[in-house]
Image (tube, rainbow, N blue to C red):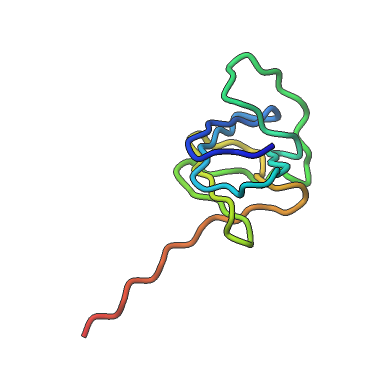
Length: 101
């Protein structure tokens, strides 16, 4: 499913919630804890978390894919790992500041 910036999503396997900052135009298989993410709907049912994808998400961190085409902001952390299919998303690192002379 294609996502737009500003879209709120939540994991169905845990409490993780994210906001899309940047997304590719094509369909992606966005997952958390091994299960598809869904629109921010408080009436969801929790399913079993995949133990291989249980490294967790951290509140306030930005997560990106290797290509840099997807960026998510975690608004509520949880035990599930964010991924696109089987590609685990990494925490975006800070840009280094220029050296001052």
